[in-house]
Amino acid sequence: MKAIVIKNYGGPEVLQFAEVSTPSITTPSQVLVKVKATSMNPLDYQIRRGDYAPLFDLPIITGHDIAGDIVAVGDAVKNWKPGDKVYYSPRFGSTGSYAEYHVTDESLLSRMPDNITYEEAASIPLIGGTVWEMLVVRAQLKKGETILILGGAGGVGTLAIQVAKSLGAFVYTTGQSILHEKLQNLGADVIIDHHQKNYIEEIQAHTNGKGVDVIIDTVGGSTLSDSPLALADYGRIVTLVDIPQPQNLIHAWEKNATYHFVFTRQSRDEVHHITQLIESGHVKPVIDSIFPLEDIQSAHERIEDKKRIQPLFGKIILSL
Image (cartoon, rainbow, N blue to C red; front, side):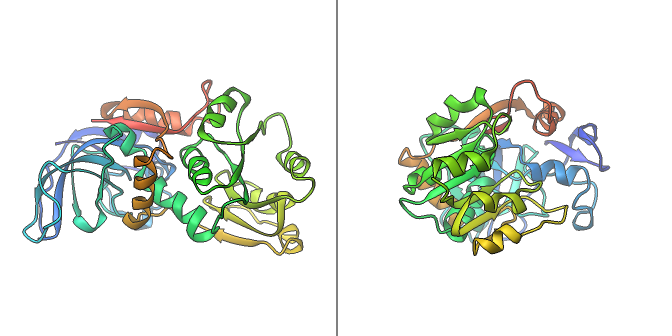
């Protein structure tokens, strides 16, 4: 089968298009899936450049989203059959989705919604579990509360806006002016151009100094130390980003703030909630661009480019 193989850590150039052996079912609870589409996540380029080198043995196939068709099932699999459309996220540390076929345990599978394409479905599994974990499990966002989503145009941000609105929250987000109409169409109530204005000052002005109940951080940097200035008393901050620099949390202490740190979630139970929101029309997958699998290097360059002319909006998809 065709696959993208990493034999050495480094830049996008280490992603090599190759022919490898098609995987086969080895335990009764496994299924073999024909991958129709996958997508890009920051986790993919972090693995490619060697951030998690101690956890992997080269060569590796990475990728953390799959939408496709079941082509074979193990003897113990009763709830799935060949031809079923599924989407899921491969287990972290296992063989990934940058390939024509993938073997996984049936416990990871979710039924693909009927009202979206394979490409749209491929944008959801990893960020779906992550967003539900951040907003519902950790922040416990409730109807009528206010939330600030920092980085609303990214894969997590575009989904988080829609999920927050479905929960009945008033949504603030940050994004470039050129993207404001798109962010508004997703359900954002107030959009702040963080290139032109100070988001803390804007939140203070919009909330009459009260601040927001929840802040979702997909940006990093000094967000953990700065964002409490835009937070209401007893507010919650949930971050998806690693913390490479020391943070002064004095402002969080003054607000009696609660912090939650979330690593990307690969959970079928949480993706199930997103499936329901997609099927009910409350959530629509957002696609930035679609690349063929063999153009993987260009896809990685797109997601990593900090000076891109066309701003990123949603997920980058790889079509097979």
